[in-house]
Amino acid sequence: KQAGAYTLDKVFAHFYAETGNGWGGPLDIGKNLKSGVGTELRFAFNSYYLFPMKFFVNGSYGMNRFDVRFPDDFITETGSNKVSYGREFLFYFGLTFDFDLL
Image (cartoon, rainbow, N blue to C red):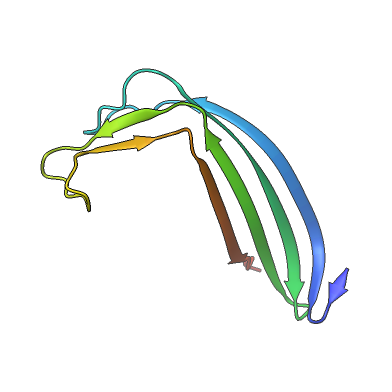
C-alpha cells in the first residue's frame, strides 16, 4: 500500500513470553527467575522508493516484583538506594533506517 512517498512493504506481529535472571555484577537481584510477557507490531516501509525504514511499537509487562539495592556510591534522584521493578506495563516505540551495504 502506498501513501504519498511511503510504501508499506511488510507488517510483522509477534507475542512473546520470557523468563530469566541476571548474574554477576555489583547488584544483588536475587536468585529467583523473573518472567515477562509482551507483544510487538513492526512495519517495514520504503520512503521515496529508495530508503528502507522500520517502525515498531512494543508493550511489555513484568510478572514479578523485585527490588534492587544499589551500592552506596550510586547516586539516585530520590536519594534512596533501592528501586522496585516489575508488575508494570512498559511501552516502547522506535523508528530506524535500514541501509544494507552493497
